[in-house]
Length: 202
Image (cartoon, rainbow, N blue to C red; front, side, top):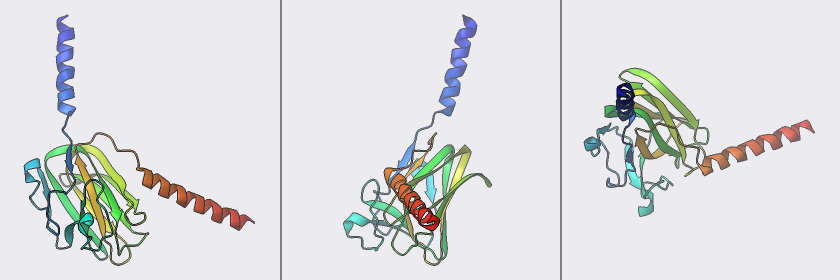
């Protein structure tokens, strides 16, 4: 009986050690065109302040010309860069996983890519790269690892490369399923490839 109780206590402690509250940032509490450097410091999240980073609310008139709608609320975080743009986001407390929504915006090309890289200190521990779909077509990107203390987000492409991120989540324990828009886009690409292959075989 005594050993059973001790086992329950140890299991409970381990479960508490794994538990972590998920921090969600949707960028809807920052004024348009401002830089989110320390607005989220109270959450233990710190953004860089690169010169090309702009936050803009599309439903307020799209004055930035992004041609994007935020995924949750009217605002998103927009990035401009040529030929690429990177930003580092650091965390006061190490986390197990990070995910965000990303979309290419006006001025980018369908061949542009986006990479989310996670670091434990200076050591890279996880990375995911996706090809960006059509304008305002958001897809989820996520990484899981032990002891993530920062992430780097970067876009790359031929020439000017703007993109937006939204619905940043820190402390996730599993990667969300692809969104319907992503699955639809992949399906269309697959059907186009099959049509092309069939036409060549004739």
